Amino acid sequence: MSNDILVYVEHLNGEVTDATFELIAVARSIAGQTGGSVDAAVIGSGAGGLAGSLGGADRILVGDTDDLGAFNPQGHASVFATVVSERNPAVTLVPYTSVGMDVGNHVAASCQVPLVSYCLSVDPGDGLSGTCQLYGGKVEADIEVDGDRAVFAMLAGAGSADDGRSGGAGAVEAIDASTSDLAVSFIGLSEPEGGDVDIAAEEILIAVGRGIESEDNIEEAQELADALGAALAASRPIIDQGWLPKTRQVGKSGLTVKPKVYLALGISGAPEHLEGMRDSATIIAVNSDPQAPIFGVAHYGWVGDLFDFIPEMNDRLDG
Amino acid sequence: MNIAVLLRAVPDPVEELELDGEDLDRDFLGYVLNEFDDHALEEGLLLKEETGGTLTAFALGNADEVEQMLHTAIAKGADGAKMLGEELEAVDAHAQAATFVEALSEGAFDLVLSGVQASDEVDGQVAMLVAAGLGLPHVSVVVGTEAGDGSLKVTKEYWAGITADYSVQLPAVLGVQTAREAPRYVAVARIRQAQDSGALEEVDVDQPENSSGVRITEMRIPEVGEGADMIDGDEEAAAERVLEILQAAGVR
Image: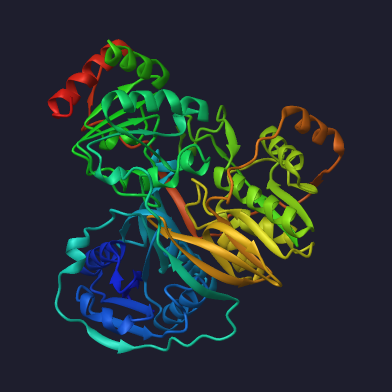
């Protein structure tokens, strides 16, 4: 077992994702405390060409293969699991993303190391520990890990992507990326189609969340949006219910927006949502739960019922 | 195709949470079906309707909420439902997965579906851990499926609406984020019929032990609103102030 830190490199269409650079920044900070080296494993099509952008790592482990498509949940995970079992790093970092979820769980199970999910920070001090964000960001939990190795699935924002980008040129090593008997095969990628409204280009967004309760209430929020010359957006639960089209979704699986004003109505502010709107110039939040995490990023907040607030706004704008 | 769907009761996401030491104060906590599991059930029902076969719903614990969840699944079209164990105790994702794996090994399922995540999974995602326990391939963040011959076309969302299609040989486990269609509505009368149908079966299981190697040592409600200028008063005061803020931001 080493005291090294291993980072899973997430990449798509020839680019390393910001989530990966954040992991490298976290890894560098852990290495600063433990003296271990930072290894970054990049697997898949075009992996070799990405090594140059991973100078934040001490060693770049390249498993170049065209057999797995953009990402293969079984293939990429099993190649990475081999790296983990051979090198036995103290800390393995994956992003808490669609890709990282397949990789992290697979690696932890097959290498029999604990997995820490929804992780905000890792402390390699006296035994491995960390902080996690649970219940949609409403609770922070300190955790300790049994043993001296673990896989940490890091939430967006755990490190600074800019810090992770900087650095010299790491040593490049080739790793075996061959796989056999895969039950999952990659067919192809699809990019989203544009919609009637480009919420990323709007100056004012009225965004509704679970607090809107039913499809019938969307109309009232739309009226407010119309009166303000704003566009209506929403958090994931509303889109998943089919109450608004996918093109109106703000957050990790939707769009990232930076309007002049973001008025969040009945949105609790799960980490996946905050990721998509926290850089808006002015954020106003209305929520009945005074502990809702949305108030942590809002500039202005009112604790109360959105069904009292919306008619009050509509009355004033009519008059 | 014989489909198993794993359902979990989670703390109602709209409720204000209170803490009791290293855990939530669960005495007065309301539980609801994990929303992603609701989507897993819907995707399972759609596949069952397209391909024939059966759908069995599984859930842990015997709380009223769990029974209600399973009766609702039956009312929506599940052929059977199994309630595993007795008390709904706070067990980690590894222990939940181990219980599901034991229950699933008794049946021959072509496909196991569950929600991609739940808000309390500090030690990994149950769906993926079940895949590991059964030694089956898995795909997470699934947003659609299409039945083929001995395989399934599965659509996985990466991020920002970018998706990828996969061909997955069965049996397999999928962590569903969003079903192709919004979860169906079912009338209360049908749920009552389900209660009388006898399709719900209680299964004894050993209380699973937490085995993940991840221990919560402290929980806290993060201080929020520190940076936010909180508006005092009723909705009139709030509307008044919001209009002023909009004006100051130069959009009114």
